[in-house]
Length: 130
Ligand SMILES: CC(C)(COP(=O)(O)OP(=O)(O)OC[C@H]1O[C@@H](n2cnc3c(N)ncnc32)[C@H](O)[C@@H]1OP(=O)(O)O)[C@@H](O)C(=O)NCCC(=O)NCCS
Image (cartoon, rainbow, N blue to C red; front, side, top):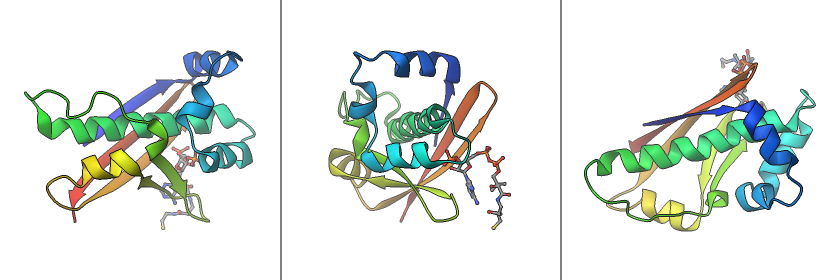
C-alpha cells in the first residue's frame, strides 16, 4: 500500500508558474478535463489529489522492494492515470512502463481512494494480486 498527502498552497504555487511544463507533463488530458469540470470550480484541488494518487501508487509499487534498489528511477506520471466513473468514483488506469512494472511477476489490481478538505489532498493506493 501507499499513501501521499499534498499541501494545496504549495501545489497552487507550482501551477501558477506559467513557465512550468508540470501540468502537461504530469496529467493526462482526461485528468485535466475532469479537474476542470468538477462542481467545486477549483481545478487545482482535483489535480492535487490526482498527483497524490500518482505518488501513492509509486509508494505502493516500491514497498515490496524494501532493501532493494528502485527497479526504475523515473516513470512518466501520465502513465498512472486517475479515471472516474459517472458518479465520481475514482480508479487507476495504468499505461506503458507503469503497467509493466505492476504486472512483473503476475497480474495485479490497483485500488485507489482520494480525499481533499481545506489545505490538504490525500490519496491511498492498495495493490492486490489478481
Ligand atoms: C462518497 C462520498 C461520501 C465522498 O464524500 P466527500 O467528503 O465528498 O469526499 P472527499 O471530499 O473526501 O473526497 C473527494 C473525492 O472522493 C472521490 N469520490 C467521490 N465519490 C466517491 C464514491 N462514491 N466512492 C469513492 N470515492 C468517491 C472522488 O475521487 C473525489 O475527488 P475528485 O472529485 O477530485 O475526483 C460522497 O460523495 C457521497 O456521499 N456520495 C453519495 C453516494 C455514494 O457514493 N455512496 C457510497 C455508497 S454506494
